[in-house]
Length: 283
Image (cartoon, rainbow, N blue to C red):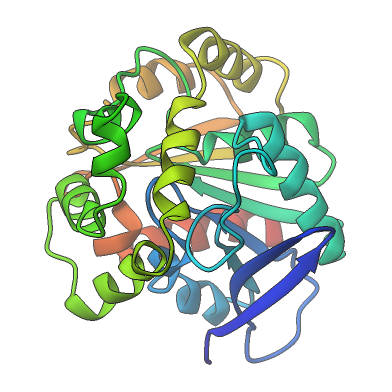
């Protein structure tokens, strides 16, 4: 099984995505995997083959402004949660995806949760890995500095921002081969840094996260699994433990050694958890 790399034109935008098909065609919904900041779909390549082994098509796009999707001026794309939610829906529509399993991870991926909450009929199951969902959430310093005038302009233009953030958040060394791919957008255009600044400045507020948490507990009724790297120094598991308590459609799986980007260094554990979670729906 090989992960293919594809580009899809959706309106005025071009999306890059990675995809893997199972050995035998199935009727199972595809798994959509959404990355966080400042990552790209590459972070899911360790997990995707494990899903395909269980008969699941896996699709991982680069968000607009990241990786090899279009990196746009903020005059052409607002880089807000609402703008991402609309663009994501158009991407799904272009792929003709009526039903999906949705997996999100990290800052920015909250836009995927918002999409799910507003389109529950399309989402069969939702898995959330180390993503801001409920307060308290404090933007970690490596990301907060991206929003500071002048400082952010300088810091976000440095390709080594990838090394510092992804390795700092995961707590492990990432191979030079992968880092070379992660850095490519920054080496190609200064727009990558400006997009990162714009996204970070528009991340959900405390009030917005409170509403998301409330909706997940009450309004949302689809099976939802939190897969959490509990060694994450940026997002504590404690608010998630409180969120899922006593709610039948919410569950929590803890990965004790994983940090903010669990799929980077614990793909087997993440893949196994997702296999089990999605198999419940398939059975």
